[in-house]
Length: 131
Image 1 (cartoon, rainbow, N blue to C red):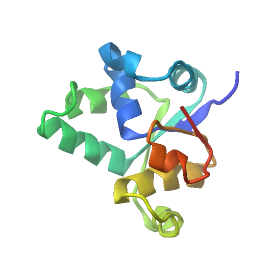
Image 2 (cartoon, rainbow, N blue to C red; image 1 turned 120 degrees about the vertical axis):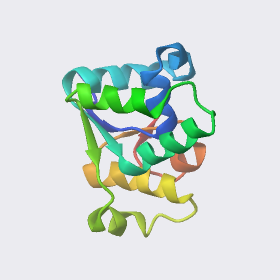
Image 3 (tube, rainbow, N blue to C red; image 1 turned 45 degrees about the vertical axis):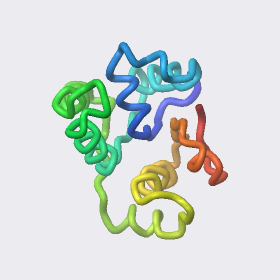
Image 4 (cartoon, one colour; image 1 turned 90 degrees about the horizontal axis):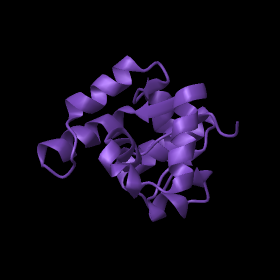
């Protein structure tokens, strides 16, 4: 076993849950998510869930928010990270990112975990990100 606790960004979560989209994940990302789901924790920021609501309503993703929420509720490996003062304090110093990306990266920093994320802007922050 390697990495067992991870936060996950919006697209990685959608692509993982929607099995037909698994091919959009790198092999390493897919393996890490699978391992965390079996043996650890997948941290999901509230902002990730809100972004899924928005993308689903706009028809920009192939899965509904209800399907994502059901997967999260049915599997105890998933832990929702609330947007609270502690997360805000971690996110404020993260410059050069969109708000949702700042909060997702802050979730990784707050949980001391490796973030699974394809977004180049986040990966360029020097944080512990894998793809």
